[in-house]
Amino acid sequence: MPLQQQRCSHQTGPALDGAQAAQLLTQLTAWDIQRAAQGDSEAVVLTRTFTFSDFHRTMAFVNAVAWVAHDQDHHPDLTVAYSRCTVNWSTHSVGGLSVNDFICAARIDALIA
Image 1: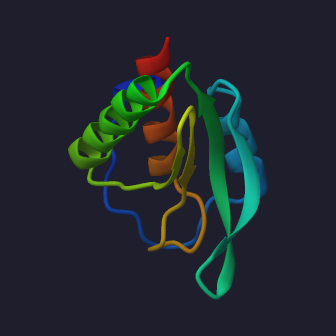
Image 2: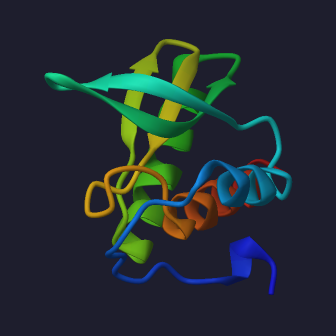
């Protein structure tokens, strides 16, 4: 079943390994796996920056992401500016990336398509 048709579930246990994450990444558009600061530590995140023509379109996107996050009960870190929004997904309960991050990223890809 395509990622955007799946639903998030509570994730425990180890994070996805590099090969698993790389395989799921092939199902997404323009997302990247990076290390990012989270508080006093560093985490692996699934990230993408979206650009828009104006603030209103940026905020409409942010609200759409918020709806996806609420619906899936899985919440990203967002960095919002006038014409762009960076979305970072990670799963704190596994200490890295889980399938939930890729499901939500795929749902955002579907919003943009």
